[in-house]
Length: 216
Image (cartoon, rainbow, N blue to C red; front, top):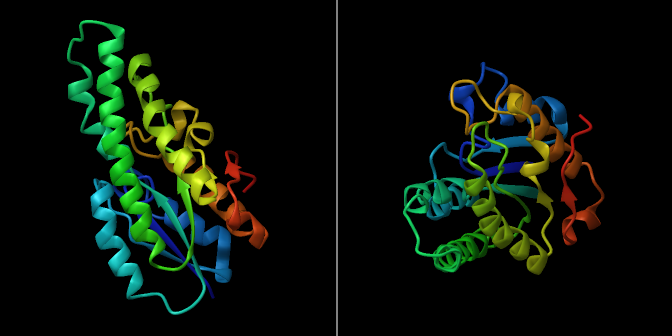
């Protein structure tokens, strides 16, 4: 029975924001049944550098074939929101600030993926969703800068992608308890897309294929 390791943040570890049994990992396990064992190592609030500890835990649990899903980076960007609200003298100056933050994000994201790759398992990554209710248009646009890093790294490493921007596009996809967390509905979409990916042919895990809908 292959293991499915979920690494990252509250996109996967959304237990505090949904009813019991409606967590992303629980919905995914229900969809997969006995064909896979879902292992939740993601932690609410974790940032890119925290994935190293999650990888260490996964390394101690691997005993055969498996898959790794990584959804992380959103909290790193969240930590920049206050800076993004600072005034700039021009659009170009604002763009330069975004470029510097993007460079730092790229450095940490690459280091994270390098560490995940040491597990020797097939890996898929997720984008950062941008459909959060009430999200300012400017912040939504700024998220594109960081998602560009994720997509470029995925293409360069031939990794499948879960595009959460497409999956979670309705207000009901976000928890009423915290609008930046997946709701039961959003979690169902995410779990469904992961299940679709896991049921795909082996070759899908050797190239960049974008999954942005759920048939589950």
